[in-house]
Length: 94
Image (cartoon, rainbow, N blue to C red; front, side, top):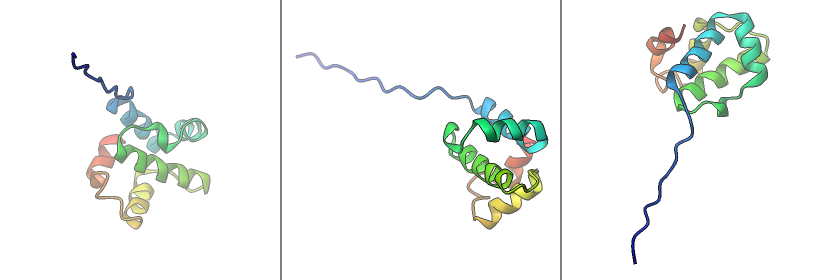
């Protein structure tokens, strides 16, 4: 009997696209309004992006300013900053 190979399909994803969404969310009020209304952290494929967006959306829901400094501090407070690549990675997004 011939062996059948099983192909595992990966969900469509684009790291660059996710980075752009996060970057716009960190730098543009209009972008965060739209992203927070239409996206959830589960819409992101990359774990570090899920963590970043979750913190962004939590800040947005609490009417806190969403900028790189506040998000970095919150990631640090939640002990997630190193998990996402540190402040250096956040600055590549903004």
